[in-house]
Image: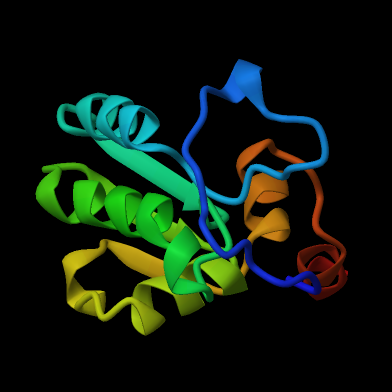
Length: 124
């Protein structure tokens, strides 16, 4: 984040973002919603932190999703370098997740059935 964090972060509804402000994290209601959806999931592929987790004022959403995955019976894949870094920086046990991968966008393309150049080269 190349801007200074606000002196007093505020929580607002997504459709009530004040002019000139940025949404840098989930709010508590969104965190509850995500946790309820993840609670009975069978498989979860998580690609991308929820907020600017590197700043303590904006790490709650990412922490909440990671905790919901830990609490869920789902097989969880944490995909992408930022997500992998987030679970480590926030102190989660890596063994609590089914798999952690630094491949984010490429992993999503693979799941979509797209040809990945690196894998195609191996097939030649």
